[in-house]
Image (cartoon, rainbow, N blue to C red; front, side, top):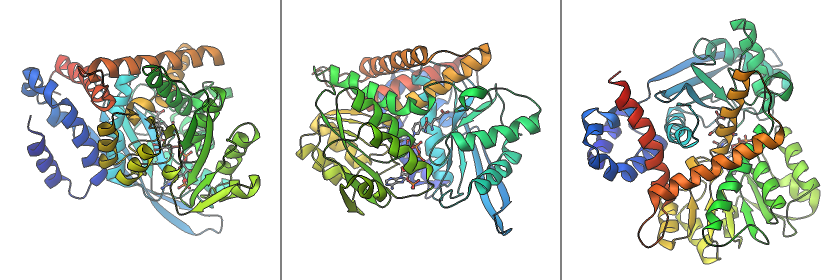
Length: 444
Ligand code: NDP
Ligand code: 2IT
């Protein structure tokens, strides 16, 4: 495989799909050597078949707002690859959603899901619908209109969506209700469901908890832990909340949160009631983090990102490309020893290069944030068995899965001097399982 040649071909076919091309390039560069060492991958056309989704489904979502005005949004489901299990991946509702963003997320999801050790293929979907400022009734009507199209494409053994930015427990409830009515079945077709109707304990916390468990494993390789460490977190959503909660349980101190409006700096640390307040803030359908600063009398830095604040550990938990080369340099200069990504692809390629050059511990999203989809997989298992596991059982399984993901990264990403390139390790381990399954199953 020639990475440059493949990328030029893809750029021609998909001009302007920047996020998708960025995600593909990173994977291809990591697996180039393994691919050359295994000529049967080349002869089975694995790369050509892997970089294009199995199918891209788009649909129109007409709905009426509270005043009766008709709105039209676009809906998508990208079914990327189902070689190792049913298509699986979240739904994102955000005005920035487009084909490139969902294709990047779907592509990443293939390798992430492969790393989890559970049988799940890769998919992603969503809409350019903006939930900000919408009433509950509007959110419900939109979710119902969205599912009116989506239900034909999904099923508990076919494609199992879940949440992502803008889609949490409330939206999954409305989506599930509509699916149940249309399909006339009550199955585990979505994950992230409510506890009383098929949901798993720990799913809301899973991505953040898993991210911190992964960072804990990375720190352990250097004889370090979270105890007494200062931690910068970005975002203030579901993932940031879970991560903050776990860091505080492990004796670390989270001093920042961020939103599209800027970041807050809380030198005393975000713990206890402040963590509960994060949930209120997120549920308020607001897109600003500033109210935290007013509520607890701390600094708010308008329009800025938190990466200039001195910390030992950084957990980017907001969105893609939110940490660039300059931010990475600032983190290193201030003594940061570990970056563990809660969001998908939050670091730009330039930032990743800085982390690798500085040889700090750097865990890419597809490994470090796999805890969310892992517990989604555990929710599917419980639904199939028609049983519920306890909080402790799910948390232990999550912990174990994150340790196994870390182990796979070390196996495939270690160099002779002991440095672990977690990007390379995650990409190779995730790729091998899917590629071998595709070879075994023939050209289809
Ligand atoms: P939420 O919708 O709960 O929260 C996302 C948060 O990030 C919101 O507060 C959002 O604000 C904020 N945000 C968005 N853009 C920016 C920005 N440019 N700067 C700062 N903050 C911003 O989503 P999640 O917490 O679920 O998702 C966060 C990240 O984690 C995403 O990258 C997602 O793909 C990833 N992820 C999520 C998983 C899950 O299970 N939920 C699993 C694995 C990864 P606003 O919406 O107002 O713009
Ligand atoms: O990016 C992700 O892994 C998610 N948004 C969770 C997907 C899932 O199916 O739980």
